[in-house]
Length: 191
Image (cartoon, rainbow, N blue to C red; front, side, top):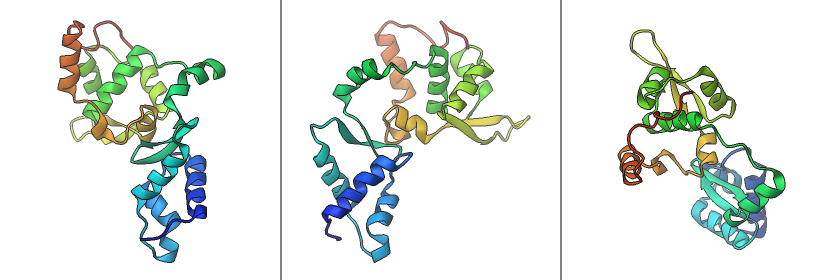
């Protein structure tokens, strides 16, 4: 294994800060070891960098199959007040996003059926513009409808490492019943 130097750790910090998306294990291996033909213990590198930020205003967080720097969760509410709150997604957009995330790849007609409510084109446009969903090919059935999937931006936005971190649909339905919320997700809004 490659012995980590101070410069190696600084390089990883800079890569986490400068990268537009999560830094993958392959990117870290390339940055630290490939050019020298060395094997790098990526989890140890991440643990070492994460330790540097323990108790600080930023932290290393797993997201989208890699890692990124983010605001410490305990500071997020205070920062939101200082920087202005990000406008939350409308309920209809969240419902569409949940349907896509839990059943992807999925057509717009299938999302409508899952929500039990119409899906406005503006809702799809918003999710595409935000980079939360993207086309995933075409359905093999009649009409070859567009299929949709979530993106790594979706994973990052919701702090997920991978789609495996999503709750199962049956678990969500049981939770809704336990809270007395009744039936389907599309009962109270159309969009």
